[in-house]
Image (tube, rainbow, N blue to C red; front, side, top):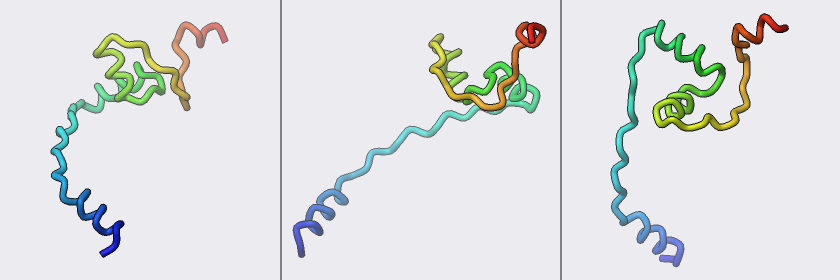
Length: 75
């Protein structure tokens, strides 16, 4: 048995702690559409966390964003 095999066996013998189950949120199609519109291209998980914990949204590279109505009238 080589040193590498022993190191692997030692590491593999350690018990792995259980991870907490992810949080799931069920939304209607209308609720999810409204949430996507409000997020304006920000990933929904990041948007929900920012709103829930009153944090600033990190600068995210956005695709296919919709302009707010106020700005649309200016262009």
